[in-house]
Image (tube, rainbow, N blue to C red; front, side, top):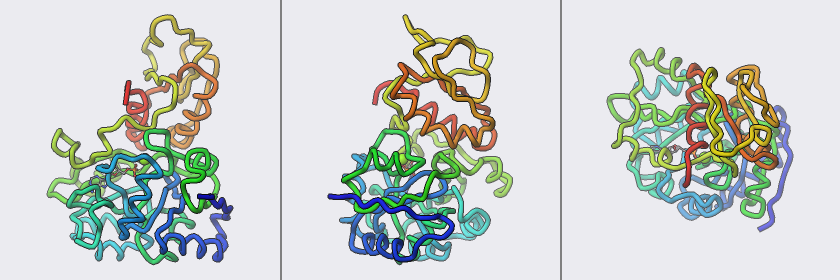
Length: 326
Ligand code: AMP
Ligand code: MG
């Protein structure tokens, strides 16, 4: 397959390009597109054959369900059972980096939800994503537009590296704003559960809900299969460093051959330093940092940020990138 890469101005997207991409979605093809979190690899969420192509293009395990992307909150009502609490969350935080897991209606194919009886829904806060979904006239199932296990793409060049020849169209809308994936909250049960921390802060959600979010135990981990996998990982080892702690790179390693990324002044003579001025910038630069640094350095030391705001999501990505083995 030859991938068509099309540039779009996010603030003034060319309607004929969008229509072209929407037509590809409608006839069961794959379109990679920008959202505010990371680039997505999209297909018609209601067409099982189209959704299967997503799993194949990414090499994604088939039991890891996909998020359905909407262009308007009302669309949720036809797809899942929406209660008052979910409706309030949608009207407060959509469009935005908040994914809600709800009991699925039968119209969502099993392959889209990884065989679960729930489905994950989100309305992205990006003009290209919104216009594409609206023009396609169907919800778009989309995981991140990278080869499974690799750091997620925050710009079109990275999508091209991973998926060239595996998608019909790549919409290039420039770099994304948030840089890590959405926060996933399961609201299908009485107690809302934080299944994956991400771009939307836990504190803000808890304040809104008036209750602390539960965290997954063994059983609920099975309910969010994506949490099981080593993920987001660059090709070289990642070590976590907390400010104040001694640096441990492992036997015989020389910091001059390693790169550092984080917010603080690093402890030793690193070969390369990527220092960010805020947790938001750290989140925006994390995945691109992984991909850039892996090409030139023996390993990457990532600073463990405070868990406030986007810090909790950052911690999750860093922790999983640092896991050994697959
Ligand atoms: P990704 O598309 O790679 O950003 O991952 C989507 C995340 O949402 C993964 O962690 C999935 O496990 C999670 N997810 C999607 N659908 C569901 C669902 N029905 N129930 C629980 N988690 C879900
Ligand atoms: Mg992903």
